[in-house]
Length: 294
Image (cartoon, rainbow, N blue to C red; front, side, top):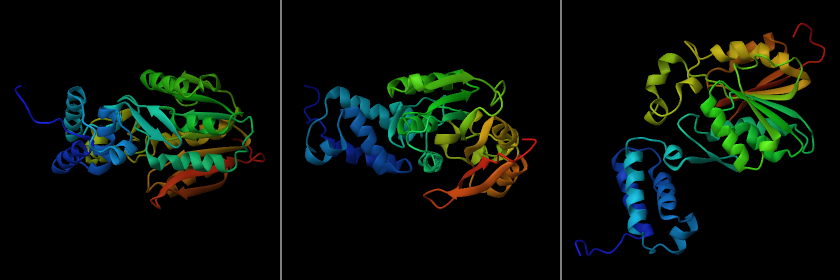
């Protein structure tokens, strides 16, 4: 035999992966190492604790080595594994969509607050991407139905796959389009969106995982990051039913500007909600049925 050394076991593989990621300066090496070992070795988190000396097969070790190499080059774990957990669901993820982030779960949380469990609401998700937001809502509200719009056909394919995997394909229509173009007035009870909101000159300062691997189309919001909101605020109010709600994600420093845009468009009780990191994250409000010219 050319190599008589025993195969690496689960705990050794995890420690070795963690050390390599730490040495490469990868953020979050402990969690990333665990996720990559679990995926490569077809193991669960419990397996690493209860059966730490289980050996990896030769093929599993080779897969793990490939995963770690890719992660040290700052490829996101979600792209390496092709999936990402969000809210209470698991989503397929590709380089054609934004990797769903915990911050965005604030959109789901706020949208569900005043959303009766059996309400047959119609939901519109503008810039649907992987489908993370609208599929989380549809999974929680069985009587609801939704429409997701995206300009990217590749993103829509990912959302379609996720809807099918989650058994929600019959509740979600997907449409390629430019925001609300072609939609009628007063059609939806709830509109959600996580539009591109990063200023153009900030893109190059982002972490490599985002800057080099995420779709620019879903990130870049123009010179001040507000281009999408200037379009969306009046359009969202146009397609909302009277007393319909809107919930949109914003950048941490965009509260005043985005609130002003929605108030000017006819939004009522416009307010900003903070995320778990205590940063401004979501602007929400509703369409006043007494408002005119909206």
